[in-house]
Structures are given as C-alpha cells and as structure tokens.
Length: 236
Length: 178
Image (cartoon, rainbow over all chains, first blue to last red; front, side):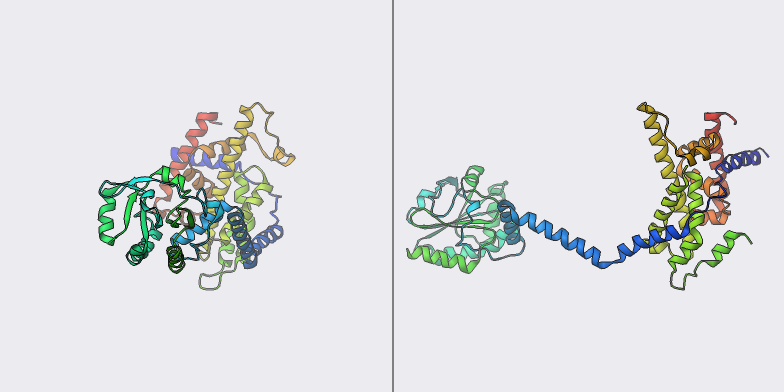
C-alpha cells in the first residue's frame, strides 16, 4: 500500500512535466531539415571534394618549405626502398657540408677500439654512410656498400659506415658479423652528425680524392647512380 | 487501440526495405514531445528530435523492428543530457553573479516551480533511474521499457520501484514532501 502510494506520488510529480497540449511539433519542417543533412552526407562528390582539398593542402604545406620537402624525400626513401634519390645531386638545404666543401675531419673508434680519422684516408675516394641497425633503408644499402668495398677497395675507395646506434658495439658487433660487413664501421656521435649536417638515416656522403664533398644523399641511394659517381671519382 | 499502438503497427516490417521517411513521419512528433517533457524549451526539443533522427539515419543497425525502442531511448538520453547542461549553465550563471537566467516568453509561461523541481531531481538521481521514470511517464508498458532500455522484462518492475524510491528520496531531501 505504502509502495503504491509512493509510486502514485512520483507519477503525480512527473505528470507536472506534461507538455502544452496545443503545441504541435512541425514535422514537415523537421523532415526538410533532416533531408538537407542526409542529402549532404550522401553526396559522394562533397566528401571527395573535401578529401581532395585536404590532401592538396597537406601536400602544398609539405612541399612548400625546403625543410619539410627534405623530410618527405627522406621518408620516401626509408619506407619505399631505392627511390629516385640522386646521389650526384647535392641538396643545398641539407648542407652544413655542401658540394665542393672540404669534408670535416673526425676521430671515431672502430670495433677494435682504434681511432679512425678521416685524414687517414687522404688521397682516397671516401664513402661515408650514416646508418643504424634499426633503420630499414640502411639495411637495403648494406649489401651494396659491401659490394662497392670489395669491388673498388683496391682502386682507392674507402667505405666508412658511421653507426648511430646508441647501444654501441654490444648490438653492433653481432649485427655486422651476421650481415658480413667488410668495410670500416665506427660509432658516430652528435658532434660528427652536426658537423656533417645529418638530418636522418640513411645519409651518404661521397668525398673525392681532394678531400672535398662531391655528393650528398638523404635516403636510400640509387645504387647505379652511386656506383657511377664512385667510378667517376676514382678515375679522377 | 491507443494511438501509439497504431503507430507501432504502421512501422515497416523488418523484412521490407527500411522506409526512413515513414518512420520519421510516424514518430517525430512523439519523440519531440518526449524530449520537450524533459527540457524547458519546445523549440530546443524540436532541434534535439531532429538530431535524434539524424543519429538514427546514420545507425542502420537501429532500423527495423527495434526502431521505436531505439528512438525512445536515444530521445530520453538526449533530453537528459540537455537538461543537465541547462542546469550546469544556470548554476554557473548564478555563481558568476549574472542576473537570473534569461528565459524567453514561452519558457516563462511554461516553467512552473514544480516542473523545475522535478527536472532538478531528474538530473541528479542517475541516468538509468531518470530514463526509466521518464519513459514510464510517457506511458510505455513494462515490455516496451525493457525493449527500449535493453533490460530483462522480469526486472523492470523492481528497477522502476527503485527509481521511484530514488526520485522520492531526492525530492523530499530537497523540497520536503511538496
């Protein structure tokens, strides 16, 4: 009984919310409103136009600035394997080290703990490759660098891999063994990366016999073009 | 047969292609009224009812024989959300020393003190309780309540009774027995 009274009391309170009985919602106007929205959403043209405009705006933003352009080029190289990166073409914006400038000297340690200086390779063509074990694009390049080293070492090419791995030789040594890396590998540091203007990996510098930078490549090199450039430098 | 039963029968069967417009015409006014009971402004209730139907249009799994329950559930939730937001807004306006909330003439005419009390209580007793009470006060049967709120039909009576207790307790705490 008590329960029934309580329920009735609540019902009476809620009945206070009764609408104005003269009020008639305007069904036709509401339907027109819904139709306008649903037609807009249905129209594939509108969606595609927005999508195209967004993509175009993003592309323009990325390509209009040299810095973002270089990042895009670099990303493309890393994720899509050998791309149209021209090792013979120096990107002016990359360069603390630009073409025809003297390559900065460095002193870094190799796997045996010996100091390696750039000046040790005076009179040789030097290929400096910044890389890391976790870098997908770098893995693509390693067999090519091994091949260049074996093919052109006697003719005066020195390949130097500058690893930017933070774990050091603990990670690097087994990796080099597994990949059969025959060329010199040193562990790089921030000073060297800054001096060379490294913006990402892989990044490759070709230095002529005169000690001047001949070419810089951000991203995976084009093997054929790179080899042509090496033979051209060796011939000089 | 009640007018609402006729509407239910008029709704398209699940097997036939879904006719959104027919459902809209059959249900819009009712859904707008459900919302208008909760919010203070009938124009706002119509806007919210349109939003409910847009959501319904975008949600194909709600089409079919369960459409009515889906619409009631969504409408009452939409109304409660709006009511909570109105209550919050009014509280901030009081806190920051603004004049009492401005109401249009229709609101001034419609909003009685008792309605405000009931609405205030509905905003604080918990969504499930408030949904149950509001749908019940829109004359939904236990079966329809169970379908709309996806409850076990056998539990509806018990849950409704708890909701009524919660409402009464909160109301009495705030305003006395009224």
